[in-house]
Length: 73
Image 1: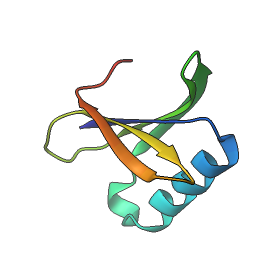
Image 2: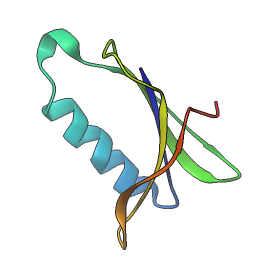
Image 3: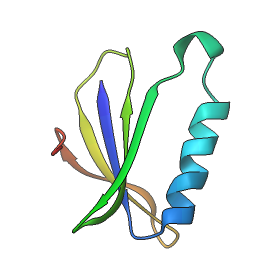
């Protein structure tokens, strides 16, 4: 499964990534890729979990908000 998270705040996104890494077992740590584009900073999380690919937006005001099914990479 691929999850893509966008945020205007690079530090907030880095904190989210750190929290994800702490909350996964050592045998199932997902692959993380980070970057920036016209929508802001993004974090791509690739895991072996089953499920549909998803896109979210992360902000301090609204937290993690689902934006669409599928991932625009």
